[in-house]
Length: 250
Ligand SMILES: C[S@@+](CC[C@H](N)C(=O)[O-])C[C@H]1O[C@@H](n2cnc3c(N)ncnc32)[C@H](O)[C@@H]1O
Image 1 (spheres, rainbow, N blue to C red):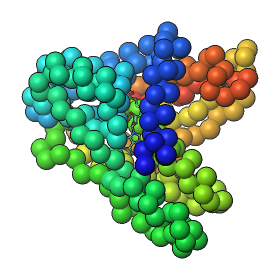
Image 2 (image 1 turned 135 degrees about the vertical axis):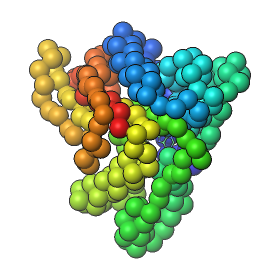
Image 3 (image 1 turned 180 degrees about the vertical axis):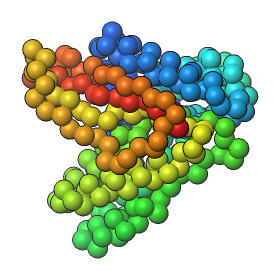
Image 4 (image 1 turned 60 degrees about the vertical axis):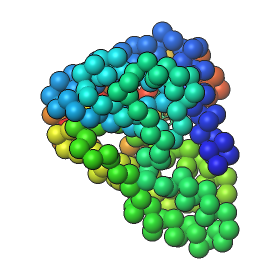
């Protein structure tokens, strides 16, 4: 299912692009790590849960594993190189779960037949899916995943349906609302891209697409920066793609 829905290729693509864009990416990754450590300062040091851990590129794992009793990494796929590396971290465990609370499975198994009816059911049900955090979580890090949660799902759906923009937007809103609702106030740090910016070869902005459709929480402190995601023009032909990223503690 995850192969067909392109979760594996998407994750491999992250590492491939990182290797090609290392300089630009390192700036973004350092800002993510610094923000997480600042946010961690005000949290109890029992259990930290990381949502969307992937390759751990943007996670200060050494510091967190020293500061917290337990580090729980959640992702739908943990790369085998990461599982190997984690053998050196006795207080870090991995959980393989869908952070939408089951939408991946639901969409894969239910949308193929009876398309019209399932489309309506999907939209009605979307807001009932939610992920439960482990008990007694002291700190949750939503790690560059919020704007990603819907992308693979909606790309997959589009291969089967011609859904109206309104219907798709509605689904994205439900996924994002459910994600933000699950993050406990006073214990959370959220890092996400909020806009995709398209630029010409000469760095002129020619388009900005919003990626987050909901109001984010009132924050304790925040930071924002630009992530030069693709300056080599390989992600989209003949244009550069940058992301405008925010980090919030709330
Ligand atoms: C853009 S990456 C975040 C960067 C990541 N921290 C890294 O260093 O690779 C998004 C991660 O979220 C995971 N992911 C996407 N959708 C997910 C879902 N519904 N449930 C759990 N993990 C998901 C992907 O497998 C990927 O590892």
